[in-house]
Structures are given as structure tokens and as C-alpha cells.
Length: 210
Image (tube, rainbow, N blue to C red; front, side, top):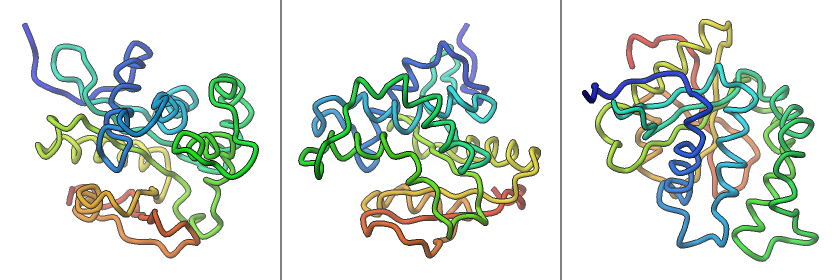
């Protein structure tokens, strides 16, 4: 019998669903497949490395039948994660997405450049928010309170691990996501990033208000 949707820890068997969710939400919250030659670069850059390197901070929304339909994942320590990304993760996937030799001239090349430069995640102005996260849900599961539950689960895990604050970087064009983060208590951080993105942060306390 199918059970109710629930938040649970990520399992290795969730990897195909994790990749699918990421691909279908990667283009400013929309499906990336019409815009990229190989959208598999998105999960290999923004989702799978977190599940691989810090599985204890990876949680999924299970539809009640065992299928992951949303996730939240991240790192407790961005500096440490960037180093592990280069040393452990990048050698596993770099051959699939060669780094452009010059300025990227395709959407895929732009993401490949990000993949090959994990140090971009280390921004001194974000040091007071040492953790960072990514959260995505399939469209049909959005707007139903599950994002809030995922966020609460992740923030509680950080808090219990002694991490005081978390940040995220999001595309400014993704207005529904910004509205969600505002409701979750995130506030804009003044950091030197590209105009196409914005940094948001919040403490891991005050979860009763979520």
C-alpha cells in the first residue's frame, strides 16, 4: 500500500531520481533540457557531489512509493567542500565535460567552467554563513508545503551539528524561488557575485517559525 509522502535521508538508489529532479528544475527553476546539449552536467555540478561527499546532509521528499520527487542537500563547511570537490569529485566526472579553453561560447560550456572551478564557492564575504545548500522539487510537488519541510529538516541537521548559519546562491530570474526563500527567513547578503545571481543567508536557529 502506498504511504504518505515523507522526508527521509538520501539513499544511493535515489541517484537517478536526484539527477532527474535537478535536470528538470535547473533552468531558473524550469526544465533545462530544451536549452542544453547535455543537461546531465547540472546534477554532476550541483547535486550529486553533495550526496557523494556529505550524504549525512542529503534529504529527499519520498512520494510515498519510494520515489524521490524533491531534495535538499548541501555542505556544513563550504571551504572544506570546495577542496573535496576538487580532490575527490572532479576526477570522477571531469572527462565527461571538458573545460572550455577560452571564454565559454555555449550554455553547456558556461556550466562546465563552473564544474572545473569549485573554488568559486569560497567567497570571503560569505564566511559568516559557512554552510550552503541546494533545494529542488519537481513542479507538481511545489507549493504544497514540502519545500518548507525539507528546509526545516536540513536546517535542523546543521543546527544539531553546531553550524550557525547557511547561505545559498540563486538566479535572480527565478522569482518564485526568491519568494520561497524570503518566506523561509533568508535575507540578501552583500557579496561580489555576478549580476545574474544573488546570495541569501540565514541562521540555523528559530526553526519554530518555519
